[in-house]
Length: 194
Image 1: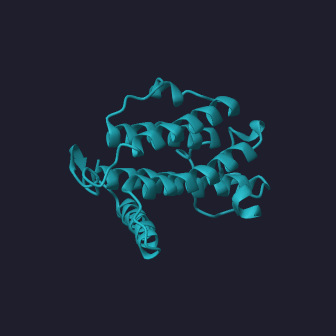
Image 2: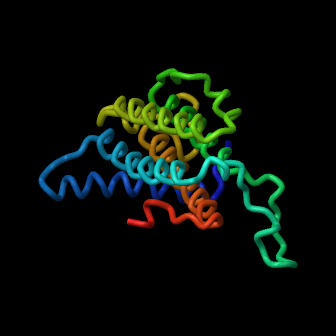
Image 3: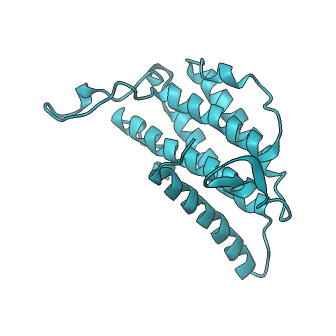
């Protein structure tokens, strides 16, 4: 898998956020562990995303943008756009993929089955469980192993630290898409309403 330019920028931004978290903690006379710094970033996207997936009504989980919502004559392509439930299950499945790579932990569920989920309750539950798995995986990151190169490393995701921050960036990317889906349905995302 080769990283596209946008993905590389997300990885770089996530690494910067991680380092910034460490710098702030050190600036206060404290040192945060890599696990604490990365887990704090995962908690942020987890809170925002879980709020969004709970806010979307169950009858809108099959919503996807279409030509109908754009002005006539506007050139757009929506043949492969994910529905809202597909966004949720994609992030859940990806969390298991990335974080099992970070830690070597085996997922606690059938990951392939996640992509077959079609209803809100199961999707919300799968996403929550994937974030919990992510936190457990991040706990395995130590100052000694954070930047060791992983066996099957992809460019930009060679270490436990970079792979886990990429997972956070990936979730933020899809959270942004989910926010648009909510707004297209007249719903203010909970994180924006605060």
